[in-house]
Length: 265
Image (cartoon, rainbow, N blue to C red):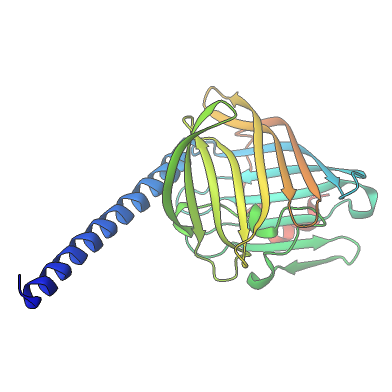
């Protein structure tokens, strides 16, 4: 075979390999996205809900402090959901409230009401990677996880705690996200079981473990426990969910406006 033929054969082989790789990458992207499209479908249709929440903070030495919260959420069929979080205890932060207005593709708008200052403060996009009131959850962790806000890659199928899961990498499209990527375990009921969060240095920053699922309204699976562990500082935040109420008649303009933050107490 001549040198010219060898070169041509090598180029043909490289082209075949590249095409195959590109095809595989495209399939992995679509397969990964499909997992979250189905997750979104199964979690839609609740209209609105209210739920009570206990937040348990522990430092690296194990010292504990508890907070009681109430959460209201409103489903927006053609847009991102709306979320209102209000702190009931401790006394020092009672009445503190966060309003998150979701968008399908753009970063959510978020406002924080601080009763001690009697003012509503908008959270800047570049600050949403910061911790939410001393917890190991960031402001962006509380944003509406719309499908279009991420790019996806299906990684593998594996068993987690005796439960079969699809493992998918999702990459935030928000340039100000504190994460380069997240590895998410989703079970056959479209329930998120675990998320590994990687920071801007590509180091494993946090792990969220989700457990104790209960079926509500014969339709919606909701966890009773979420446990976020920060691998860098040794701190943890545990969320204990209880008393879910669905379709309670929440109204967008009345219950999810910046004015509603001040009335949330």
